Each structure stands twice: as C-alpha cells, then as structure tokens.
Length: 271
View 1 (tube, rainbow, N blue to C red):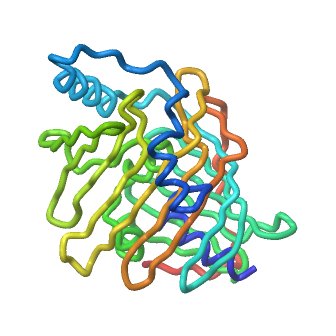
View 2 (cartoon, rainbow, N blue to C red; view 1 turned 90 degrees about the horizontal axis):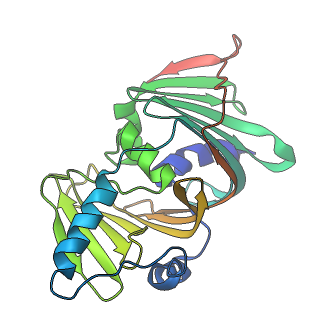
C-alpha cells in the first residue's frame, strides 16, 4: 500500500493513459479518423483555413462547470510501480480533487489543488502536506499551472502562448509549436477532425525542468464535449516515469462535493 502514496506524485507528474507508447504513436495516425466528419477544404486556401480552424479550436472556451472521472492507473517510476484507481473531480478554474485507492478499495491519498495551493493527505502514513502550486512545479520539474493541469485532464492542448505559434502541416496531422525560456510546447492534432493526438514538452537545456510526452486516444463524445478516455504519458529526465490512465467512467456538469478533511491526529507538513 505504500505504493499508493507514492503514486499520487506520479499522477500529477504525468497525468494520463491506456496503451504502450508504441501503440499510442500508431493511434495518433488513425485512432480518431472515424470519430467525426472530416474537414473539407479547397486546395487553394486549405492551409489558411486549417490554421484558422485550428486557432478557433485551441481558443475555444471551456464548456463545462464540473467534471468527474474514475480511471484505472498503471504507473512506473524509480520510486514506485503498480496499479491504482484514481478518482478525479474538478470545478472549472477553481478546484481539482483527486483520490487514489489501492487493493481492497483502500484510499491511500487525497489531493486538493487550487490555482495557488496544493494539499495532500497521506492516509497510509498519517500526515498532511500543505504547499503552494510553485512547490508542485518544483517537485514534478514541470512548470505547469492550475489551468495547465486542468487542460491535461480534459485532453486540451497546453500552450505557453497563443500569440506566436509555429505550424507544420503534414499528411495526417498539424503540429503547433510555442516556447518560453524553459520548454518548447509541441501539440499535434489529427488533420481530419482537429483533435489533440499528442503533446510533447521539451526542456531547453535547463536542469530545473524536465520533458514529458503525452498521447491522447479513444475519443468519446459526451453532449457537446469530446473526451479522450485513454492516455499514455512518459516523463523524461534523471528519474523517468510513465503513467497509463484509462477512464472507466466520466461525467460533465453534474453536482459534486469536494470533501477534504484533515484528521486532527495527522501531522501537518508545510512546504
């Protein structure tokens, strides 16, 4: 069960999946081809239209108030390896709540993330850790904000900026690249329906951050929302880790509670 407590850090270092990287790479090419009607373009202005449609997709506002998901997780890192069930609840732009359970449905850890704070209850070892979002960025070595984590869970692109984007149009995909002083953000979309297939974050010669690769697969439609139920993520660096998440259940816009009670018997750690 100690693996479960270590898994909570891996979950947010990685954030999603269901297949091996090899299979996910193939899925980027063909998994979403039949999911929605293709985009019909005239040859003369196809590039301009693709860029415009993709920009509209990237900049589309979040169309949800709450999200609930239950996923099977398979994780592997130098600190811990194994399987767990992950429950995720979100309130748009304000709360991410996570519970990680192990064998016999015993909860090992609970997490509450807000735009400026991270709280972790380690139920197996009897303590709670309270820290800032900056501390989460430090331990994961990924400079992701609350909104970035929200987008990763929903299967939306994580971009440094939308002001200056580089485009590369290939036979089956469109790649959009942005960058800052720490990372290059590379997001690849399937060409026929503009769904996100892969996000690649490359570190720019900076030991304070690490790179990561995310594949999104098996899109399903819930109302007006298209959601990838399978993810495959690999984090690079000196302690490489992988996480596969397969959502078995998910809903949008349903009433949710976000219970997060720290026992008075728990030791409190501040980071």
